[in-house]
Image (cartoon, rainbow, N blue to C red; front, side, top):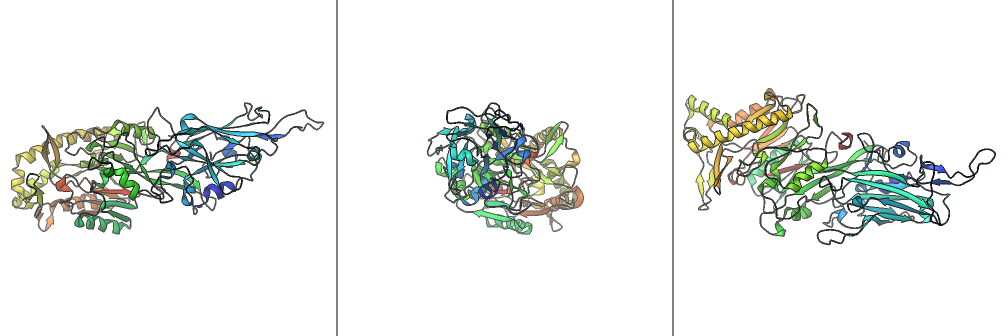
Length: 628
């Protein structure tokens, strides 16, 4: 792949302006002469899109001409939802009515109408797009002076929450000069596909020419006088644990937590972004990371993947004020070049804990029977807003979503008992699952070996919600095993986990040796009149995964012969060749961080408090090559 041209819309596509016309170039057939040559002018009614996906809409390329109305795994033009901010005004580029300059050229996709030099004086052209698409895109035209862009069709108003002036335009008229010279246009998406039955993401384009008398010109190639093409907006795709992440986000509020994350990110040589200006340490929960991507041309004539990472905001903030909404913080602190923001919800301040994104995850790529998910499959827990579920399914790439039951958990998130890690196996990954049963067995074994007095949670404190003080968390193995409430809660949790495991195995086709149990006990808390389960020991399954690195809560298990038995067990299971984990099968790089004070005792863990994302090419599978 070559270096990306920063002038792709103008330089690359205008470079093809002098190319010959394609198969929509046809003579107007008058009476032939003695040599059989037509006497009439040659008319060109031709709209061109990048149907062959080489980054250039080329009238001389039969691959663009022949497939301009098709969309499948091998052909079909596409464009981006332009939801990043390339001019640093804290407004998404698609939310204003201008081309934003600089790198924004990479986010706008050009198409063109070919020149018709023999069209007569007074001829006019018309580019049309369908009504539904017009409300969701903007179309710009490049001026004949070669330097200016004008907004000419699609949504021509701001049409935003702040300024709901919506004026979609479905047609753009070309002057005789433009018809004769040809024209370069460009399209940006101003929204995503949101639900099945709404906008399907396609734009139907049509081009026609009429003469000075208003007569529609026709050719053999266009007997009805109209040339047509199709384009598709890039869908939103969710990142998962097997993504090649290059950055991690978290709050900076807990120094010991930050140190543990930093140790791992430094070792992996990826960026670690910390924030201190938002009152929510649950970084995974208040936004979700995914991406948009399309192929574009490089300066040396190659093709590369371009797009933007996308932060999808949770519908509610920590206080019932608009200022606390995650989308407000994201638009000030995340939005930027190739960094987009998105809100899927219908109403701000809607939803509940289920709509935090720790309850939304991605099963890595798999096939089972006739089901094939080359980009993974979205996994959600209980109780998620209908519009979010509709959004996931409408993308058509990582759907239909799979539901794992989370009503039994206090916080109600799938990341409290499930995770995924890379493995050097035919499937390429394994499932991590919470196992209070294994934790109890490990404690019983330690007790039987004469270590019943060893302390669990040495030096740690619970928060006392009644007094605002602290309660010692340290407890001996003997006393913990004798605690009927903890043992009963753990047993109940295990029953539900086993049920969910069995369903997930059947759905995916997982074998037992593709599942690794993560030992920790569960407690229970009352919320209203109902009892819910919550991790009693730090929930090590609730982990941050990037590449061959995994960071999880320090378990503060009993020290026996100088080792924390839970740390030692996890290092053996995940950090050695025992389970074929990591890309080379030799194990993951296992890191523990102290998340007790700011996360564990406040009902969350490492995954809840971190959020990774990635830059292009985002995935080793191009969504447009899946045929979906």
